[in-house]
Image 1 (cartoon, one colour):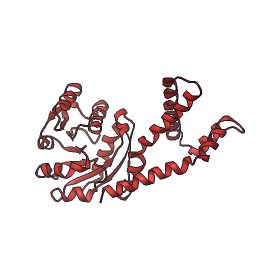
Image 2 (image 1 turned 60 degrees about the vertical axis):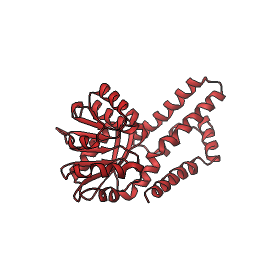
Image 3 (image 1 turned 30 degrees about the horizontal axis):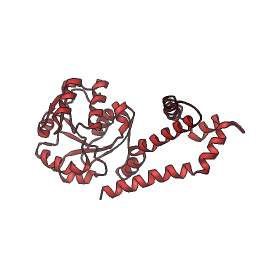
Image 4 (image 1 turned 30 degrees about the vertical axis):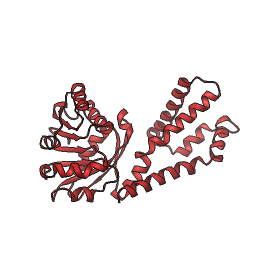
Length: 271
């Protein structure tokens, strides 16, 4: 296993950082005592320390010095300042992984010493329940082994795939922003159930489980979504009536445009 005897540091313990730490601890690919985390918010750090028995600090340099792999789980707006603070401690024997949306490998590498090994990852909020979808791309000096290590880490919180960096904005628009496109769908389906007489909690449970089940069918059967749709759609039945209504209101174009516009915004943020 690539992570054997590795020490992992996480800078930034907000929702994504904390989800990553929990995923790593729960997967047991690294011992909790080999995980270091830092943040400016001491209360959150202490809660994570108590819950997961990891090492915590308010000093990012300490996290870097104590780690072989450093994950930067911070907002893109503060990434440059974080890199400036740890630059002297990021030696070539350390792997740096950034999950800052829209910040290119080139921009990250330009803030570090020459030869720094950098990987960029775009996960999503489903990391909080261990079902993230993450895109991974490698920097100039990162090795194949570095990419494999990164995939191993991010597969503790869901699935992870290698993509070319020029496609990272598409990953951001599709899976990075995607959960927010699905939440209104679940709410709307539940509203339909409530309209037809179901109580709210029952409708929400049925709607959410329906989305989860449909996604698992796509992933686990390998059958194309169109074919799966046809398996449910009987002639003159209830499902084809509903699909007709969706098509009438432009369901496909709406979702395609959502991904395209979110991808465009990701490109804008990276400039």
